[in-house]
Length: 221
Length: 221
DNA sequence: TAAATAGATTAGACAAGTCTAAATAATATA
DNA sequence: TATATTATTTAGACTTGTCTAATCTATTTA
Ligand SMILES: [Mn+2]
Ligand SMILES: [Mn+2]
Ligand SMILES: [Mn+2]
Ligand SMILES: [Mn+2]
Image 1: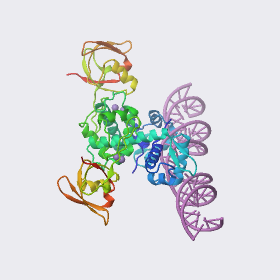
Image 2 (image 1 turned 90 degrees about the vertical axis):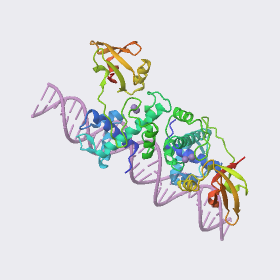
Image 3 (image 1 turned 45 degrees about the vertical axis):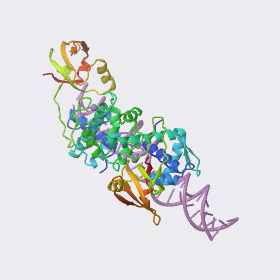
């Protein structure tokens, strides 16, 4: 069965929404994520349902079938492997790769993605710290905290970001924060939820609530 | 101006046909190359003409404008660079890469193609010996002979192929012929235009007229 | 629980890219 | 040169993916 790029994008969107709200993904939320109007989404849901890629009942929301989930995971695998290639091999910065990966993720070839994986040394995470599903669609889910949940004086290492926009990633670059950065929470300002941190070279930095909830960290043991 | 993948394929086809028959490329020949029916081609020619990518007069055939030629060359550049990547980096064989490159050639990013070029060491030729246009669309045209034009006892090196099908490339593989192979023409059989060759390890091989006209060689000095 | 609101679906339209059948133009041939 | 053949274009239709406007359903709230 042939799956179009458009259909792949819907499956990926449903997969992503399901990670936040497992049951009954709404037409509206899919439309918002893909920047497509609801009636268009409605039509596509019928089509994906006919292809047995989703479970769909009118007005009841939608859920991926296991076939649909596998396909979504394959698209995500390709997206993240290509992003890794672009950063590791072609020396792009982490804020530059998403758009290219949005195109590359639709290249059809089982063999290509597996060779690419091998060429990159079977990476487990992409340049934004997101896990790369393996060839069987298995994905390592990491239960790490975001920086806003960290106690004062705790030391942590940056392992990912939740916001992938150019603006956010650029802001982190300018602040000298990247994957692997070691940070210490010096002070929490309860008034606005912001924090004061110190980096490994003792430099202090003030980060807003908005920013720290998008930085994923693990304990620096 | 946005050029769709479909439009890119038409431009590439016209470019390729123009190398054989510079003036007045026919609707029919484009259709045959792209496996698309003539009326569809006719429609597209109007569209490409409106976009000033081709010069087109009804019933008079078609010609690329310089804008159209630049775009065609960019697509060819991308195709050949990706093929080189697939063979050099991902270890695909030369008969396995064309279909993937047909998809990859449409990835939109000026920066990506130039970084890829650099990553590959600015290769001048692709895995089939075809020249890779540079960033300005300049292409090195090589005036090499095909093996059927070589005198008896001359020694040559294989620098390209004219038939890119899996079947032909596979046949060459099985015969131990690849880019860089050194061959000596031992005998020409005038009856059927076939030849007897000797490879660098003195092994003899009989090649049909059909085969040798698709092998591009240069003199082995 | 009845009305208001939000969300979802249906209806009808459009663009891109494709097709077949019919009409027309150009070219070859008798 | 008149006719036959071939190539091209026009006409009309279909599919995919999108939209807006209208209608229907579900949920919230007074
Ligand atoms: Mn991305
Ligand atoms: Mn990513
Ligand atoms: Mn090719
Ligand atoms: Mn090639």
